[in-house]
Length: 271
Image (cartoon, rainbow, N blue to C red; front, top):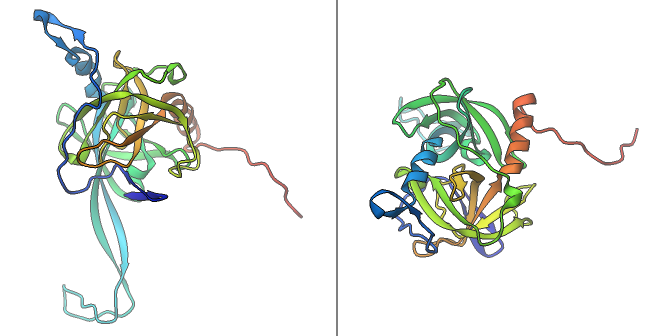
């Protein structure tokens, strides 16, 4: 799913064909570990099980031309429509392991006929939509299991430009992947991505399929939900954008209460 922002190519994180090379944008400080090795692996072993892969089947409708034939019985159709099933993939973050709630992006599951969740332990589970808020690009889905690992979140208002972060997701449907970078900017808006925007900007590489995945700090705490990127290529990660956890929590709380995120309107009505 792609969008265009001015003259810059802007791609949202749906799976597309082609290979890319992921790399760390900047060197990260490391965590001391056993045997004098230097690694982030212990922290990631705790955080990565809370990030899931999501597979979505959608039904698109195309108009037939008068010369289109029905391949099944050979009859010709005129000005009719037919369904075409397509598949796409994204990522999600376990919000409540006990109740099976998972947070992802609205554009990941938009118009979904079916949703499947692939857990880090190899299980694949069907999911249902709990509620959505397209204005912030946040949705909650649910799977029927109590054996989920939830991620700890932190106050995103405490983030500072220069903080190290890591992005976890399923780019191009190749499997769970981690990239690294820093917080490049805060409170980014007017990007034309969502009606309501307050993004964390990062140079951690984010690719198609990372939508709905986790942006975490070096303590393994969730600071944002990855949502979009601008200007990336196979050699340049471009600018990534994540929805901050404080916004995510507010929207998720409203969705779990009412199935949506209602907002008041200000205006004048005429009788």
